[in-house]
Amino acid sequence: MTRLSVNINKIATLRNSRGGNTPSVLEAAINCQKFGAQGITIHPRPDERHIRRQDVLDIRPIITTEFNIEGYPSEDFIEMVIAVKAHQVTLVPDSHDQLTSDHGWDTIKHMDFLKEVIARFKAEGIRTSIFVDPDLSAIEGAKETGTDRIELYTEPFAQLYPIDPIRAVAPFKEAAILAHKLGLGINAGHDLSLKNLRFFHDHVPFLDEVSIGHALIADALYMGLRSTIQDYLSCLQ
Image (cartoon, rainbow, N blue to C red; front, side, top):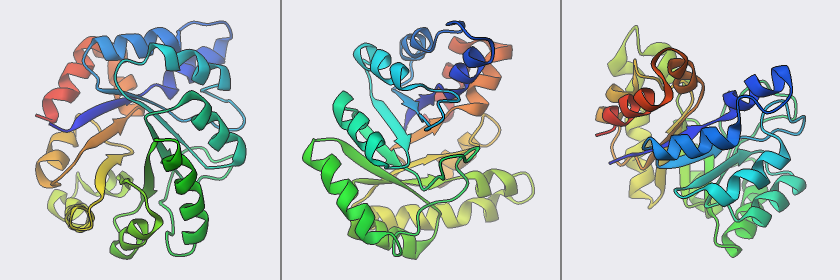
């Protein structure tokens, strides 16, 4: 079964809009695990507009599943991930003020940088994943960096899915087949939802994990967190 990691950034965004600690990201992490999620994902950004550094420190002791930290590998980010011993780190090529991730790494152009960063994490026993587009040359480059996994950036799939689902999923299927052949694990994320997740899962082989935040938290506003997580899990069976 493909694992579901819940990104709780949006819980932090709501909390920060009012100040205080409501809703609690710590309680959200505890409940997501209790309701069946097999991982918790966070993406702290330099301006702390949602997840704060203190959240990272507070959340780590209560993780009983998998703790995945996403972010651009600046020196302070690297040191933080190593300090809390995250189970997985997902490297994204975001600028410091980017609203949300919108592209994968050029693994050829940034090969030396990625090799150096990944080696540091692997020396600490932290599994590495790098955010990539469903581009075969980028995946071949990812293999050369030494990463354990890739995370397929799925917004292009989500945008095309309502129009032509088969064409939307085709490059992701091809990318997953190549990644598996190269010995890479395969994660996926960005704009996956209850509308498209089952189709994606049924057509993309060798999928280890999906990381879902925005759509899942939005659904939970109407359906409740427990029911929402169960519905997402059902798409992955």
